[in-house]
Image (spheres, rainbow, N blue to C red):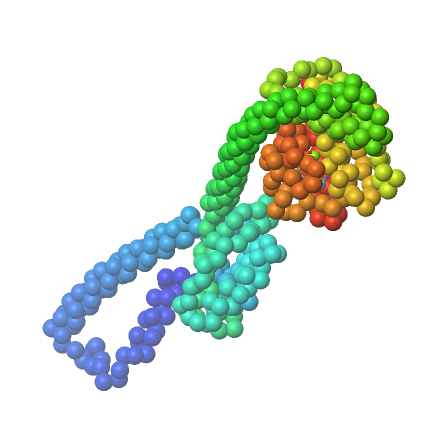
Length: 434
Ligand SMILES: Nc1ncnc2c1ncn2[C@@H]1O[C@H](COP(=O)(O)OP(=O)(O)OP(=O)(O)O)[C@@H](O)[C@H]1O
Ligand SMILES: [Mg+2]
């Protein structure tokens, strides 16, 4: 309890009297002159003391003012200040620090700071504290995910500096806490934006490559078509002559030798077959626009299948979607595409296997899938299968898929092929529901 001024003065008086040494001359032995001069001196001392007292009061006031100023600066600083013990307990905190953690300052004292650090980051804080507290004056800065009393979260940067007065119960370190949530959010947004930009660039590059490849394929296809059609036209005349001659020899010249008649029949049949191939090549390569009619995709699949003589070693399974909408398409060309995909699958299964054909509706498209268990396509070859004249077949020309791609593109659909060597191939076509 504080003593009041009077008590203090009495005490001081007693102490002073005690100190009055015995060699001091008693007052009754002093002359009048001495007493007058002593009284004068005492009055001067009294004034001096009053002045000193005034000075003291002033400096005390100044001290209090500067303490107030310091504590205002400490409490309302834009960052949180914490004094943390060796064991991680909060010994002191400013008001900003308490506000950051969403708790009253009184409640905060004696609580571990780790209580407000998210579980995932607590180990990092422990290590940071240990590291900093080991050597006086060491600094350490880390970023943490924090959790306020009400459960809301924020990001903070904690800069810890080892306290000078080390010891069991002394302050382990001083920590400065800065709320960096806005910066982190900006960084995250920037990261997302960068990723978005990167994927946009990737997408654009892919599109550019695709369109370059498509242009090359189209140019190549046009050249091939031109060559094929002029060759077919050139071959047509000699073939017609050969056919007519064979017919003339057999029927008009009256050849009776069975062997000769048999061979003339061979010539006639092969000429007829070749003429059919030429007709289909000419039909395929003739540039003309699609002739769209309303059609049922399931029926085209069934018709395409019926055109094949399927070996017994091959198992055909169809899973045709019910209620497929009728769509507009170039019936003849779509049929020839389906036939090519079926032929490709059958050729890929010389030892037998299974071919499954599925149709259904997905996201505004009719999807047609041909899945076989054939030899598959190597990674190197799968890049080339849509190129005109690429073939691995002995009898193929390598135009089937190249033409299919053109026609499906014209229908605003898509065609893709996935394959695994020795496992099989899946060819997928998507046609838009118009
Ligand atoms: N289901 C499949 N299984 C294995 N390989 C396939 C399959 N489909 C296509 N291919 C590969 O793609 C190549 C190109 O096929 P595409 O249909 O364009 O030509 P082709 O069948 O060889 O000849 P064309 O169809 O002109 O008579 C084939 O030669 C083959 O190597
Ligand atoms: Mg083919």
